[in-house]
Every structure is written in structure tokens, then in C-alpha cells.
Image (cartoon, rainbow, N blue to C red; front, side, top):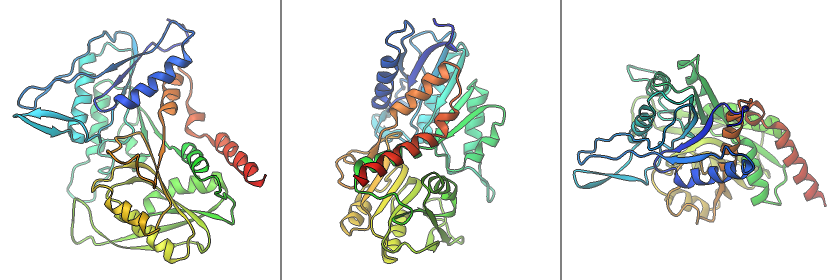
Length: 373
């Protein structure tokens, strides 16, 4: 093993991550083809009993290895058998399997890093009444089991890392990849200050939209959600209205940035109001596309001309039929994840990967030059 590596590299893919992990493996093998320390991929094995109970199995020794476990807790496309029935795996099931896999390693690894693109229970990150703090508890569980680092993307509220102040916690934002996907898919887009704006759909997304507006040098606007706090529907207080704060969007293209699309109702309501205010084309930059109620809402809104393109990453499960949608644009994050794993395994800093301002400016300059020709 090379002296420059933290430990022999092992990447473990939890169930449902097979396609993503295969692409990560491709890049790692390509970069290290000259080296004897070729990474190898293990897919987690968590067989279940007929009652639905399970156990974690590791078929190769992890002693002294630098282990990276990739887990998509939101892949409802995989099932298991329980009492003769096929049961879709819930986030709770995925998280339990992750803990089983860590337990099966048995403390023999040199270091364990969990890459959980969408943070388990990330929306239950604060306490407003007598309720559980599930995300904080989950992070503490992982740390208590020996996890050294946690990598996640676009956490709903990154301050949840305060629950584990002495452990590595990196919140990664796919800003560079989103902008690159936009200029590739919409070559006629003008990224000039006079032609486009960034919009935050609510007050919770303002920090990520401020970053986009800053690095792109364009105006920022925002909506705030007026909720009915007297009732709870589907686990949340329903939104009564979106109120806009910001400069005039008339005649401009607009990018709406958020961390997730759940049902799609909220972001479509924002798009409808922007259209009423005279916005030209509307693009969605959303890290995670859950589409919990299917694609009906998005399909209808696209037919009405409320938005032009919706970009989401492939970091979590992409429901069947999503890639075929005319309105959908995939943002592939496999190479980026592989690059982070490769960098960390060499015990080097990922600071430049977490803040790729130079790369973003290169994309913006290249696009500006191409549109001026």
C-alpha cells in the first residue's frame, strides 16, 4: 500500500445505491489504474428473516481499511420480504441497515466515513414543541458506533452538526454542477446581471441562494411562507401563501433554488406567482427530487408553461419515468463523490471541492465567450 494513503481504500454501497456506486468505482479505478492500491467495492449484505428482522454481513476483512459507506436512505424502490409480503424500504429501514453494516465491521477499520447524500431525518432538525430531535440522535448514534466523518449534501439545516461538535461533518452543495448542467442544457441562456435572477422559495433557502447570487454576480429575490400553525397536515403546518420580496422579475429568466422537491406543490406555487409577475423562463435547481406524490403536479405545471426545466441530482433514488420527462435535467454527482473519496483517502483537504468558486467562474466565463461569438 502506498505510504500516501490513509489506509487501504474500501467503498461499501448500501442497498439501492448499486448504480451510483458502480459509477464512483469507475472513476476511482480509472484514476488509480497505475497503482497497486485499486479500490474495491462491496455491496452491503443485510439478509432478513421472515419476520422482517435483519443482520449485517461483511464478506471481506476491513481491518486497517479506510472505509467509505454510501447510503441512500430515501430509496423506496427497493423492497424486502416480511410475513410473505414485499415491503418497500423506508428511511428507517435504510438507516438500521447502515448501522448493521457498521456493526459488522466490528471496529476493525482504520476509519469509517459515511456518505449520506440526503441526511436521514434532516427535516426533523429542531424542536418547536414536545417532540423528538431525530436528526441529532441519528448523528450521535453514528458517532458512538465509530464513524469519524459524515458527508452530506445540502443539509436542510447544517447547524444540526452542533449535535456532534467533535466529529467531521461536511455539508456539500452542488452549485458548480448545477450551473454547468444549466449552460449545457440551455445554451442560449444569458447569465448577465440584467437578464437573470436567483430566487429563494422561502426563508430557509436564503443562504444557498445568496451563494449562487454572489458567485454569479446577479440579483437575489425571495419568498416567505405564510403558514397555518393551528393545524398539522402530513406532518407539517400547511402553507397558506407565498409572499414575494425583491426586485422586479419582469422579462427576466429566473432560477429557483431549493434543497428538495417533496410533492412539488410549493415550488409550483412559487413559479406560478413569478409568471404572474412577468418572469420569462423559470428553472429549478433542486438537490433532491423526492416527488412523493408522483409526477402529476410537475407534468401539469410544465404543460401550462410554468417552468422550463427542473434540475435535480442523482444523489438519491430517481423514480421510474423521471429520466424520460422532457422537463427533467439530471445533474450527475458520481465523479464529484469519487473525487472527494480519492482526496480524503490521500489524507488531503477537500476545502477547494467544497467551495469551487474558481471552477464556477471558469464555466461562467466560457459560456459568456461562447454566447458572444
